[in-house]
Structures are given as C-alpha cells and as structure tokens.
Figure 1: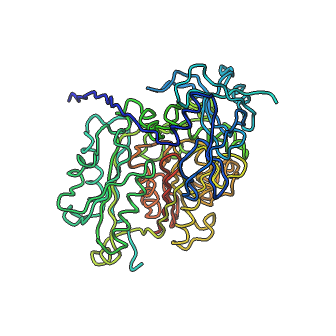
Figure 2: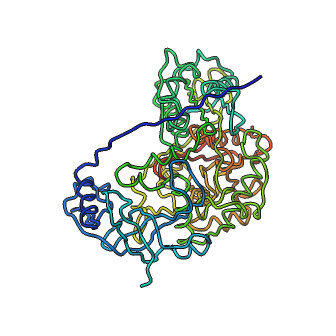
Figure 3: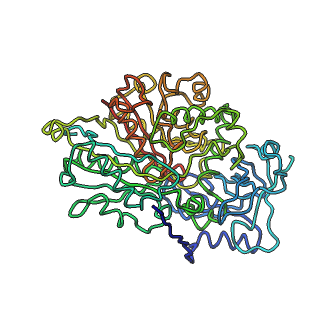
Length: 152
Length: 391
C-alpha cells in the first residue's frame, strides 16, 4: 500500500535572561574586550566561563579575576560535515584554558588551514599555546572572541 | 533488599532507518506486544509502566509519553516518564526495578520507541542540550563532543584512527549475526579509514546510525515469578552516577574526571558490582553490552567497566579479547554503533545482556554466558547507568 508522511517544522523564539554574572561577563567582553572568571572562595578555583556558584562546593563565587588573553588548547575537533542550523564546514573549535583560569572555555579556532585534516590536527594539538582575538564589533556573545595558535 | 527482581519478558523491533509502516505509538505497541507475549502475560497483569523517552524534539512530539500512554496500556495504572538523555533506557529499567524492589508492585512494564530517522537532523536537536548563555552559540553536538573525547584519549594514552576502525569492524561483524541490528553489513579497516571525516578524528563509519524502533521489558518480583512458574534472569546490580555540567571542567592537567575517560561511568559500575558482589569484573563478567555511539567511546567504556586498565583497551581489542569467541565479548549485538534509537538504546543494552545470560541470543550468543553487564551514557557525558544481569 502507499505509505504517507507529513512534514513539520518547529520555529520557536526564546528570550533567555542571562542573569547577573553572565551579564557582567558579556558586558566586559563587549565594552573592553576582556575575559573574566569567578573565583570560588572555598576552593580557590577560577571558573571560566564564570558562574554564580561552584559546582563542587555550591558556595557563591565572589571575586572577578581577569584571565588570558593567552592560553593552551585542551581539546579540539575539526568539523567537515554540514549540519542544519550549524555553520558551514570546515571549521575548528574546542576548549582552551586561559592563563589564570582553572577550567577551559569553548571557542572557535581560526588562522589554521583546515584543508588537510592531519596537518590541521597537528596545528591544534593539545598543549599548543593560543592567543585570544577579539572581533572589532562586539555584541556581548561568546562569538566575540576566538583563538589562534601562536609560537612561543 | 527483601527479594530479587527478575526480567521475564523482552521485546525489540528489527531496527531500521525508517518505519513508514508504523506511527510512533505503533512502534511502542509493537515492542510491548512482543514483551508481553515473551513473558506469557496479559496487559491486565501489569501494575505500573515506566515510559522510556529522551528529548521530545527527536520524535517531534512534545511530551510524546502522552501519545504513548495507550500504546503501553497505562490507563488506570501507575505511570512515569524517564529521561536522562542517552541513558534513558537503562534509567527506565532501573525505575521499573525499584518499583518491584521497593515492594510497591509485583509486575512492571518499561517500554519506549524512537524514530530518529524521521528527524531532519538529530545534531540540531542535540545542540540544544547546551546552555543558552555560554555554549549554545558554539556548534556543539554529540558527535563533536565525543570527537573531543577521542582527541583527549589519543593525547593521554595510545589510540589511533586504525584502533577506532577496529571497533567498527568488530561491532559490524557482530551485528551481521543479529537480525534486530540496524547496520548489519560487515566492513573492513580500509573501508572505515576511507570514509569521510565528520568531526576529526571521527569518520562516517565511526558513527552510529539514526535508528527507528522500540524496546520493552517486563520485570517481576521473585515471589511472583515462582508462584506463576515463570522463566527469568535476574538483575543483581544497579548503579547510577552523574558528572557536573561543564565540559571545559573535565580538561586540564589536574582534573579528577578527564573527558578522555568516563569517570562517572566507572563509579556507576563500582556501585553495580558492589551490589552484585563482583570484585574482579575482568574475570567474572562473561559478556558486556556497553553504550558506545562512536567507535572511540567503546574504549573508555570498556575501561570504566573494569574489563581493562585505563589506556589498555585498544591493545586488548586488537588481541581479539572483546570479539565473540574472545575473553569477554563486548557488544555482541553490534552495540550502539550499529543501532541507535536513542530513547531505548540503553534499554536494548540491558535486554541484550539479559538474552545472553538467558542463552537466547541466537547467532550472536556468547557461549556459556551467565553474568552480563550493561551501561548507558546520557547528556554531555553526564548521566550514567549500569546493571549486572545474571542467569
């Protein structure tokens, strides 16, 4: 028998409140091109991206600490496949521990030729030093910055 | 605990990309019907239903347990929906187990289905599991999140892309023997290595398929099983363990839970093994069905299960220890790598471990298996469930 299907698309709009901590973080990023973490008073860990409380102690974090702009790569991947509602490939992204931070923050890697996967992976190897670059026009979003490998 | 909890009935679809002959509730009903027939019970004898359903957007129906309530015959019965992402299925079996173990019910059904093949792009849905504040703008998805686990595992230990390919070759050869598996065509290391990169170092053949199908299980108390002269295998260990939210917290030089490994999964297994009285899993366990949707993740799952030391599983797999006929076959069904209907994938792990210790696994039977283990991973490597099943 003939089997039928019915096509559906979901298009839903949300306006997410970021809260006080993330609002301050993104304001500094937008206005001053600086990245800050929050220090947990109990453990001393500097959490980046900053959170209002520590996942380990549940204590509120109290102190802002500027981190980076240098850092080192902790994880990366290079995406070669297109996915709906995600960027056009190829692109590289992953996680970087910024200088002064105890946790890694996600961001895109740029300034690397991605045409040869093995060579690109070598450029982005774990432990590689990176510099944070900031967009000229910043909107207060994680896409306002990205990382580029540097030699030193 | 007052008395043991047994598995008395199992149903699962023959998984495929699409099932255009069946709506979503039709698929749930198919698995329930098989499980009741297998148990030799009527719907009236079921006292409670645990409904296995991961993100709604994957089936494209908000709170699809509402639509599924008739397919599991839950009218006038206790009903709970469980969702812990990829581990949903094993969490559902655990919830059914606790109904019986607590003495609240004698006979409990758990069931669900998924139609991942109907979703235009599951990675768009899975991208939405990341927080809208800091990480949503990044192209995160389950493939690239676990590709980053592969990168860290390669860095920490010795694993290369050929080791990953060996997992695919093994699991496809197992799936070829399992008529319920979705990807049943055997492959070669060259074919895997020649497939295109999706998210370096993960290639197309390193990835699970998007499957449609259902699974259901009936659990009962030992007294009910004996009173009614039913056949059963026994759930002797149940564990869960979770990990904190931020992926970036599981990296760096001095972290307790490295994203290379599956730290919380290892803890979950320790809890299951303690309950089952297993202290040497590498010697005592006969068969393992471990949740591993990408080839590289089977290595840290094997290590978390205590079947190999950290970093040693690639060499042990190369030696054939985890192939059917080897020391401890891992994923004799073909595993998640060959079949992934997300809402029930981790239930299938328990079902397959149960069929093995029952001696009912057909062409993919591990000879003489009496103790089996199963696991499920959910979220961004976050919610882990494990079980021990014994004959």
